[in-house]
Length: 489
Image 1 (tube, one colour):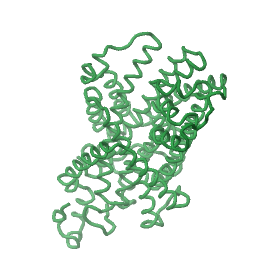
Image 2 (cartoon, one colour):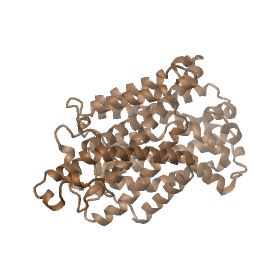
Image 3 (cartoon, helix red, strand yellow):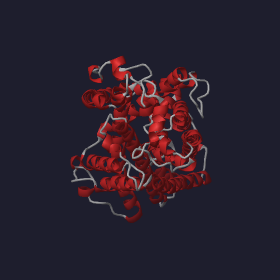
Image 4 (cartoon, helix red, strand yellow):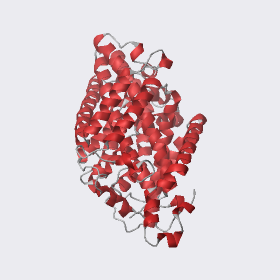
């Protein structure tokens, strides 16, 4: 049974044992089908996307060769939150990621806020990445075959087209793959991760074969400020490791595999990012890369004289983005699934297909909605909501570790954040600092979205919450707390 741990009302918290027991319910339990290697590949798949293929040029333009330090600093900023995710994912192996962890620590209404936030973050992210996938597909066609798709079927109406067919195609293809099964999806992602790491390795090998230290002077023309400013931009090339935690419920050995996958994927990506940055600067100057939409291809072309490599890097970018769409879309379905199973969204959507072991109806519905968004709506600056949503989740996950250490000190923790609460507090500080650097328009949109979410919670989620309906049906509960309907938000 769900319990409130003595805190009724909108701040009621879910008991961890109750959350875990619900994963075995008939019709609502997901299939345990992925191991450490597949989970790690999911993390790498989510992290390495357009970021390294594009953002390195912008970072080098700000920090110069010291962009290498910016990559390290951005990784350090992420690692504190990654450690907190690892502890909670191994201790609460339930779908929902930050939403579920918040429900067990800060209460239902805060969990709703972060869940509603993550729905927007992941949904807009998948749509935006799908649009980027179409653009990179055109770049690959142009580099490899000398033709591009017509604007009418490759751009949104606001950009002079009719609809973005490539974006619709990749979203629906991924939706059907996710419906087919998590193990099948993980295997496909593993192949794509192998290919994009091979493409980056190709770039690193070619770059170091033509390496020169000439472009490293002056090393930090903008000083410390340049390094930190570039790190704030590069930080978002690391986002994605949190998506691993959405697969908690489907991990075969979550207590071991999740910490390894979360921290391991961040470590692998950091290594590749730093080596790529060093290699790029070894063959091209920051000025040669900063204004290019494809800085790695520009580095090989202008620095090493290898123009044919542009096609390989363009293909790598398409595959990289495909795996990002897969993992982020997967993460959104699992967060939505957890909210439906808890009754905050329609519970029927949390039904698991008995043949495939996945929430098929929910996945298909989200695929259609995201396809419409990607095909017709100009995303523009709304994509910045992805950044603020992710950082907000980081804040709550770090706080959740601190709270659970106090409220449930005896709870099994296969992995523990060292030096708690110091490291989680540092994780909060990094996230808050980066949030303050976002434009005020992003904050306004974020607040409006949360306000809409609170209205939905007040009129639907609160009344249909599984936690509250189960309490109301428990013998003796009404005598102790009064009718459930009387406790309005």
